[in-house]
Length: 427
Image (cartoon, rainbow, N blue to C red):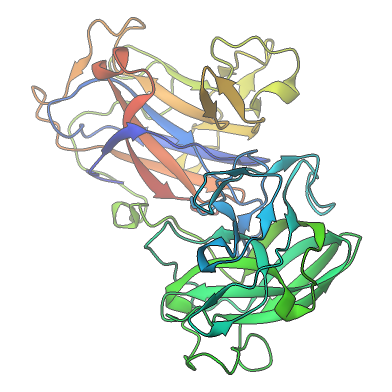
């Protein structure tokens, strides 16, 4: 990785389970005039899947953000004149809702911790446009890209998910794309029973997904996917004024490997010798070339925790006399070309609150460029350092790692770091 353009903002950390990685680091410099305190490689996302299966959303971070960096949501027919309601989400007064996933409602295929549950009541006023009306409806969905953006799932063959309903109900599962402009999305119909069951959507026409005849016929475009949504509607047999609940969890797409749109793939090249006159750390010794130290860290911080289930635990590559404060041990054979390297195996913990902020779990490896108080930071501009070069490897199923450059600016705005996302190497 060489000379990235860093983005200055707080990282939005998401969840990963049972992954491990070996990381080597060489400094050719850091961009701009920053006074650098530390370089950190942070594990910051997850899918819990095989390399050919991407988890769109498993709800296990406890928020409405999914694993693609977009969001879970619920919706009704309010905008089209209907009066259907959702009772377990906070209404905004304009027909939209503030929705979050529910603890203890997950499916049995995962940790069964969190799931997307919607409690609905279909209205008795038909929505419509002009002289045309249609059945009352309510739904829950998960986005594959942020509003106004699209996700390219070219090559994917199926989307799977787990669901149950009380009472049992037929639902319309829609794959929304930006090329459909009249809401006649490609879809399939599934009968959801009272027990958890896995369902499969085949992403092909006409045996898998299809459109209704009332809309403009448009070929399904896998390069323009926006969201997947599950609709309960009178048009699929539900009745007006009917109430119930539906649960959705573990939405996966396969075969597919998700790479965040903002990951710097061009920063990555084949391993080998890198340019630069100054070797910051080759991981042969804990002390680096500036006389400071390489370390690992988790998300305990200043929190009071009572068990490993409360925080992200690093259990390999460290001295774990105090698991809350792991001490990095450089390991022979874990570095590039079988040399010593910094390596950690870990399990991320739960989401937690820090004041009014919801913090998602994280772990990482770092090396200091200044003393612990940050009083003498490394002056990258004065050193003529144009970039950072290092070698890294990851195993486990997650989407990216993040190289963070922590500067003296962090003192006034804790957590605000310069970073660049890098794709996971999958071994």
